[in-house]
Image 1 (cartoon, helix red, strand yellow):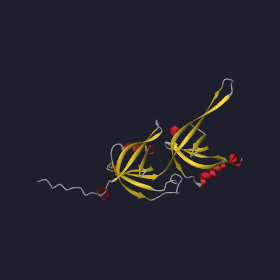
Image 2: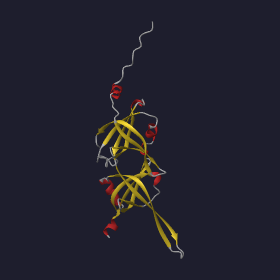
Image 3: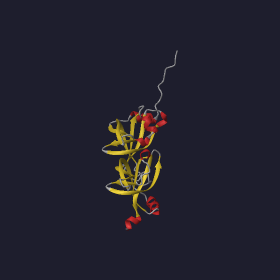
Image 4: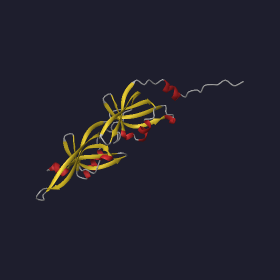
Amino acid sequence: MKPARTSRVKTTAEQAEDRLVFDRPFELQHYDLTQHAWLDSEHIHANINKAISTGGQSPNASAHASRYIFRIRYHAALDDVRANPQRYRIRYGGEYYELADYDDYNERRTIIKLTASKIRTGTIALISESTTEDEIGQQIKTETTLDLPCIEYETTQDERADAYQIDLMLAHRLRIFRAEYSGERRVMYDGKRYRIGSVRYVGDCVDLYLGERIGDLNA
């Protein structure tokens, strides 16, 4: 006589997952480097809870007013999100959130937890210069611009002090994708022209530190 088959007792985590209600819609967006634009990738329903705010505690989080935890059911498309988190973001409630963490508990591929931080978005215009000669051999400078989506972070006291050492009055720290940056030294942002004082590469992205020369301000 075969012994009676007993069902496996669910763990506390699995019992908690069974109680989740996925009733909040959001859009998962991905960045297209050829179009220089964020595009809707998927419309997903999630279980959403607000996480602890990290505003002002670190340079990477200083512009974030709030963080949310988006719990969603696993599907194969999320593998690319895990591999390339900077290429994805969330649009929820009319606001944008960048991914801070991807958590697949025990690698079970059942419920995925995306922790995302609210961001301040904008558009930066990179300014490129080229020089040509006119009919009498005079050098003529021509400027071209490339408009790109960006994230703006608040600047820290240490960053402002570092900029002052290179005679720059720091105004903004903006993040774009590094594949779109070709060493430009000037930009337009929020209706104003700035110098790029320094750059810092962060994974697939680059942070541009914008400001005005102190000597120019004094003049």
